[in-house]
Amino acid sequence: MVIGSDKLSPSLEDYLEAVLILVRRGRVARVRDIAAHLGVGKSSVTGAVKTLAKRGLVNYEPYQFITLTDRGRELAEEVSARHVLLREFLSDVLGLDEDAAEANACRMEHAVDAELLEQLGKFSVFVRNCPRAGESWVRSFVERCGAGGVDGEVCTRCAAEIAPAGGKVFAPIEAPGSDNRGEAATMPLAMASVGQEVALAGITGSRELQHRLAEMGLTPGMRFSVVNKGNPGPFIISVKGSKLMLGRGTVHRVMVKADS
Image 1 (cartoon, rainbow, N blue to C red):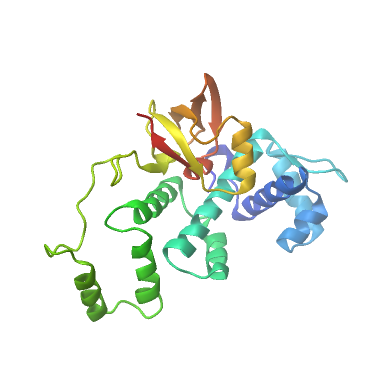
Image 2: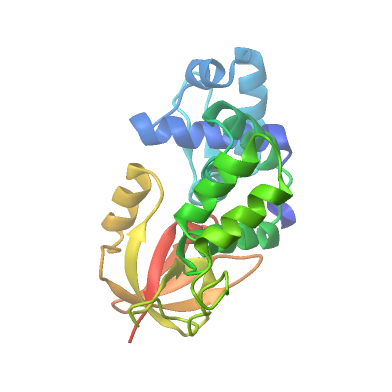
């Protein structure tokens, strides 16, 4: 939920996110487009847009296009990023089908706070990259446990199959900040510390997000430092001496490596 003076109701968050989606597609949004996207009446859209305009989140005049203000875009991106992260966690980690993941993400995105979202992001990275887990571990959960529930006998057989000669099921824990090859491990930018220098490893968001960040100078391999992790408040980085402000949802989609 957006906090502070910008706190919005779930309904207004949906309208703000819809404007963002439509603006990404065509740079502007119209009342009829928003109504079609959300499946609501035009009068409902008009009322919501007027409220968002009063809060300084959208630019709106009757019978004109609707665009986002800078603050409106930041908040809309936070809402959108929550939605994407939750949907991918539910589908990729928990194994829900796409429709179920989408429906549940729509409900959950209005309730989770920044702390829970950050922990989910960390857990998603952990299960994919930790030598004790990984993609095969996630697939095993989906295939063996996701549908029929946990079976003790199956778990025992599975553990015996993967245990190394010494009898230990799990591989040793690697030193923090490194992977099995001794290289810096990737992590969400949200996990970086203030003052830490990192290098951009990739972006897991949409092509629109990748394109927008590239326009800001964030391209693969680019080195930058974390200036501020305000919570609430903007996440600020320094790129080639310039300060850039990122939405708190975006920083979960930007993957970095600690700069050596």
